[in-house]
Length: 483
Ligand code: NAD
Image (tube, rainbow, N blue to C red; front, side):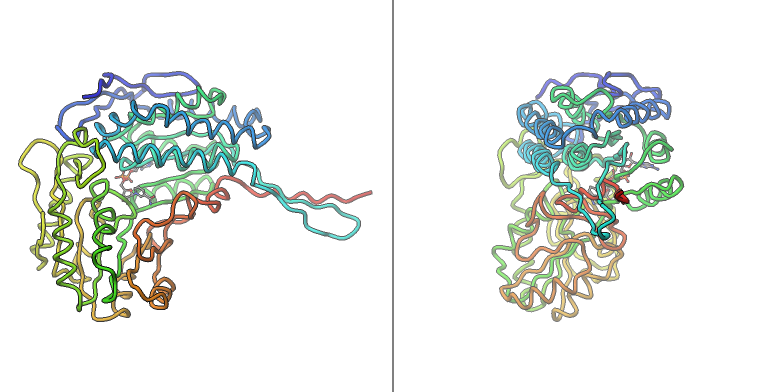
């Protein structure tokens, strides 16, 4: 077991500090035992962090740098994470529940954001617009100033990396509100910022309750831009707060994403898509493959395969699961596990059948068996609402048209997928699916380079890729009358 220190502080204006709201207990979801305590920020702590970030912004110390120099610092932060991966990964596993090998994948993914956006720093170029001989006109992009970033518990390292790297690369200063359940690993962003030469106040990291520190941050009058990843109700609260201050926000909310499996799909290959799509991170992924809509002709064959995938995963404490393989860890908390198990029971009461899993493990910790639900109809709650757990819902379709109608039949629209050997059929489906990203024949195809974000209630704005950069800058046009 890794040696985890008992008490972790917030990081404000380059200093480690206690929280005005006291401390919060961080539990190990694999055992149900106390892991550590973390300082809990109040509104005054949030204010100090925002003022420190504003001071950095107004000083120009980041925004006046030649972008390549800023980019090098951002890239160095990614290398720092990789150099410390053996320290960070066990803490991530102990606070979040995922297997150790998944923690390493998450940290590598986080480092990749710093590599990518560090590289992009010097590509945010303006252009000149011709206004005739008497004028010189150009358009440039400037950082907003203070970027407030509110982070969810499912990928605390990767989600922070995603927005922090792009914000710094474009010259913003940042205040991060870490999730109450998994705040510990964000500490390495503070030490990375220090080690890589970022000025005090450029990166501030604090844990606090959503209703207190989160609300104080999102409504703070000196915050200039907000990035939020989390649930729809919180997203609405944050967008409302942003509107009061007339600042833009990026909302990455939940999903109920569907894979359409056509009768000509490679069913064997799809087993791997299902394994990653719904059981990676115990299904606590916003873009999880939480629904499979399968053509009736191959329904029974596919269900047999999905049951094999689910039953083939060994479930237990993530810290013992160091090697990549057919295993799954705890969910993030017993409350989240009970919520997911409750949704399975309700689905059964509504007429669904458990083909695999469905039960809590009879041992301490927040474990739920990898679950496959069949005989689900599109109107059931389990087919409409996000479970955020290892629960796959299988629906049957008569043809592609019906499959697409079912896929589009929720308020969400984060990602979607289509599995077929026929490229025309796939292309038609990609046009018809209302989702911000569509995978063909590989769930989670794409990467840091490809824009990601939702249609409908899944949010607005985009993270990842070059698209995301434009969320962190504002446009300035300069029109000069020549003498
Ligand atoms: P959540 O909305 O409860 O909390 C997310 C963050 O918001 C936490 O840091 C929390 O403290 C804070 N918060 C809560 N209330 C707040 C308020 N009133 N004002 C300001 N901040 C507040 O979500 P969660 O339970 O932590 O995460 C799970 C949800 O996040 C799921 O719905 C999932 O789909 C979504 N998610 C989306 C993405 C994505 O990229 N689209 C990624 C991860 C998670």
